[in-house]
Image (cartoon, rainbow, N blue to C red; front, side):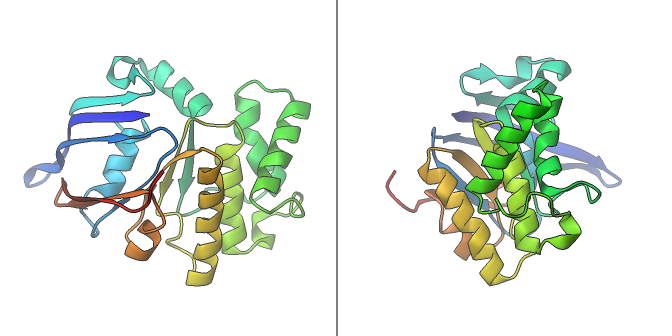
Amino acid sequence: MITVQNLIKSYQSGAGELVVLKNIGFNVRRGEFLAITGRSGSGKSTLLYQLGLLDYPNSGKIIIDGLETSALSAQERTAMRLLELGYIFQDYALLPSLSALENVMIPLLMQGMSPKDAKIKAVRALERVGLGDKLVNLPSQLSGGQQQRVSIARAIGHDPKIIFADEPTANLDSETSKVVLDAFLDLHRQGQTIVMVTHEPEYAAVADRVITLSDGVIHTVEERRAN
């Protein structure tokens, strides 16, 4: 599903050029649950942003489902993010004045879906993550774990090829984190490709495979379970 070749990402700082990713290369299999882990500053979130087309690498290739993404225009990248990819962030990124249902409907409406069809798909997505009884609740009326499950529902509402999750349990306690991870595992069992960044080894351990970064390079790759 994803092929990464010779990926380099650097930023200009006051002290000069800071190279965050150094010649990274790996593949993500279709239907795989891949965890990317490492200490703070290892480059894991930067890598996720490159894979999810939220940022541009300095050099190297990212091929998603056979498409070389560096050849895409800015408009084409935007369309790919909207139509084919899903995103989950540690701060939930929900609009506080909208209900759970409305938050999930937003990207569907942005795709040009009718309000009726968007509502049907949003309800189904919320039911998939166990929130079918929270459709009208505002984010402030939901627990942290429930808010994160709303963000998962928003990410899966349009049946994306890949879900990218950046520290999805960072703001949750251990019990709530397990609920969120169980939601990921349910999606994975249904064939969803997932790439998750986490700094917690025990959470990374639920994935099929774990890539550990250290100082911008791949330190280890560990197979965790058979597909």
